[in-house]
Image: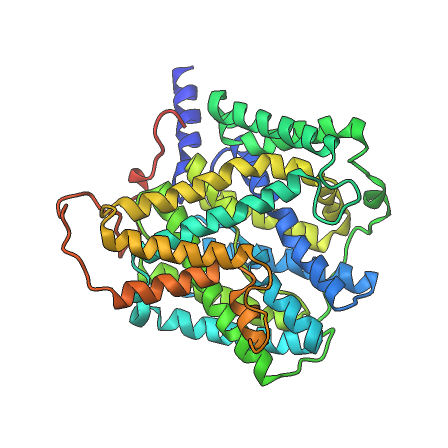
Length: 469
């Protein structure tokens, strides 16, 4: 009996190691909670681009299908790097996300979807080049810069969670009492499981919270299974469904956006690694992650899809649970792939009400913000660090909150497209500039423990989570 308990404990410990296969009873909820936390983020940008470009219902279904498949491919590359070069080999969930949405809406609305695909292809090439030469520009992204960007990523995600809890922007009952009842109950369940639960219940708090949230939403008529019954069982994406055209202005605009999104990717990777593995990613890992994102973007252009990036909400889950096993993320990728190939499964996931998703994920966004602070304070909050952080966040959050602040008379459209639609881009640019021009300070705490990158694969024995996990 003792031997059996020891074996079970050993299998559970695999969740907190990169390698090894966890027991199926632990693996499934760990994977599914990553899926349900990010699924709306995968399909919503595709739906919004379809609306911007005037797609038919069949075209909208196709772009959602490709978004799911590409999310699976990118996540698999990040867990199992291709040729050891394309992929980070770190705990991260990647896929089609909101990061590119504002710029893509602007380009797609003005030039059309074919031009958008051409700019996406060029952006993928730029991302691969950025990944190849990352070691040459790494000094532009020290912990002060990445910590500032991570903090801004976390703060900028709060409105997303609130919009979900309120019912989803644009819905007829947005902000209604029923949405908040469902959202707050879901939040309370997730909070209780995460803080007072044990074992799989604690680690899978979001997954189990979403199940209970869906049950609570049933009497309010928020769960509709009609689309599941009418959806088909199998469908393959089409190669080159649209012509690919190149417009210099669109290519330049999205090329800059790709660099900024890659800075966000660096921030997400740093947050995930620092929060779950107590170290920063090294040059090979970051370069590999960026190159994988570029490769998937190129593939996406040929299948009429959208580019990928990291999911901030899933970074929060990783940091909160410390679950870093690559098969957990591989399992999530398998669900995305299955949903992309099986529209019926995709429709099943679409049944999850938005207030449930918002209530389940809002708590993890705070973890991202706090992890940014953790990286910032490791060298002490010196006057120089406070200056870089304070001014960068002020510009980033301030510009994002004032609609049209960069779209007035005489202001080029590309300025508003690149810097006026997301807090992350102006914050990252300002942090890089200020960190480069301000004179360095002498470290007052040279013996303080630092989060530093490792050049070789970390010893799995050091990655086992503590006994309370």
